[in-house]
Image 1: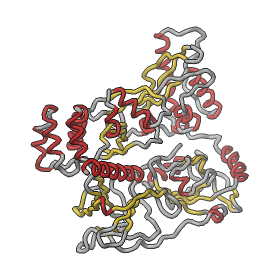
Image 2: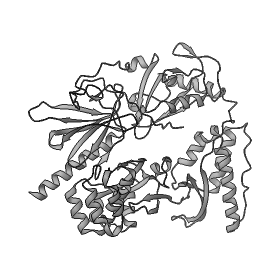
Image 3: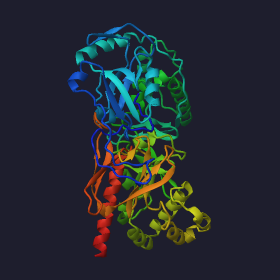
Image 4: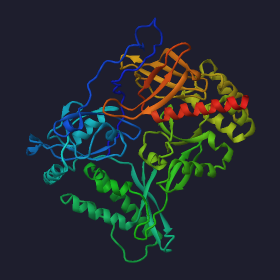
Length: 549
């Protein structure tokens, strides 16, 4: 299974950078001017191929980005790898292209010796996965690389030790088949029924009965010692609606039962069945999937889309559904609700449906939102006067951000509550514009090379007037120390991808008047989105300057 975890700590750069400080009069949690302490680096590729080596992986927006396979049971015969004997080892079976693991130097076939400093020789697959999940945002793997020849030699031996699979570990997955649809192949005109599989109430995929039948046959070949639940029988004639619905219920019960066994649910066979694309194959045209998108006024729309569609296409489909004026498309975007108080803009190269089905942490029925993508106060005033839908959406989004504490209402909270009516939205927005947090993006707490010691965190805050770094506790509580950067003092910014020396980061260069240029690195989980915010503010400020000149 793909390992996707969350955590709190980052590994900082080994390279020297110029740092800043909050206040020279406060020696404790402050930004520090000293250079980072030197750290050891990972060995070369040649040494990694012969000896155990440690790889540090920093979770990115796509998780750690690798699969782990190996024996389910514990113990087993020693095996020779690169001339040394080892107990059975879990191995890396797949690495996501351009993912965190690949950028850190992990390779398919690498054998895992330690996870976060704990030896995993001869342990179960579950123990290794649990260790990886419990490690937080930073993962340390001690691995030994093998040649392709050795990998082919070792894997059959490993599989031979898996004749007995642990079926005792159970879990409850929120998987269901709430409905079925009759669709038509546009090329042949053939009509057939597909059963819509949902995970946590979200449409995951649609599959025909014969695909379920192929799944159960594949599982029986793979897990020969498991007693599978009864599978709905085939029927040579056309089914009535009542019979089709009965088949739906039986397929749902069968799928729930096999997915409750962790070893089976996590198998590549089941994962491929649930996650592979609904494409034309052997004249089979599977139906589109559903995706729910939350609007600023808390209404939810449902779109039927191809699950492979990227963000720009889905965004335009959403705008068309709500009759959103084309002139306003640049001022809104699709976001993922990552945390209660943080949403990140979806990248153009992402598939919203992938995000939709893999994020189950939100309290709402969807994690995809249609929201504001605008920082400029001047442009906001102009748009709210011209377009009622903009004023309405900005008002509802402001109400939500006040309720979540993103906009800091302070003593104005009772007055805002009194204005919390659609007929008084102009007054509500006028008051919100004077409050901290309005029309700005605050990122989750993260380390920065500008603050020492490294366990101390900052909150990056992007606003039209300034960029800020606010010192905070590990729980994200502001400590009162804030340093501000005027946009005119910032000369450049970039995203650094993770490598063997440091994790991914966002960095920017700035220079105070009559001072030399300095660089600040921010080790946020969302460096690409932070760069997008910087790019957006720059474009809006340039547009304002042209308009006002």
